[in-house]
Image 1 (tube, one colour):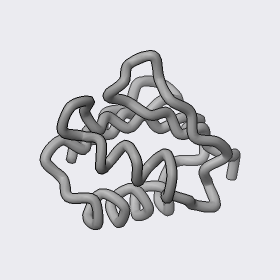
Image 2 (cartoon, helix red, strand yellow):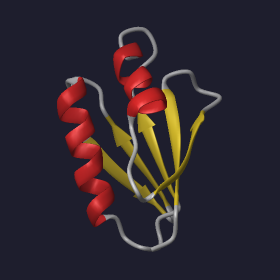
Image 3 (tube, one colour):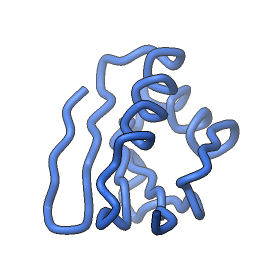
Length: 84
């Protein structure tokens, strides 16, 4: 998994990560996320990333996540973050 920051938006690439590991990695990152980050874009993939997509959009929760939105890119989900 790779994280890339561009201003207040961070992108996390989950290609090749199992569901249980992805959940732990995302929660760990969100626990340590800088206060000025407003959005986490999660790249889970489109054809083989449906398990990760469904986990993020349907079963993932964290106190820092304000809302979960689909992206125009079907292989990506946007997590809008609350301010600390």
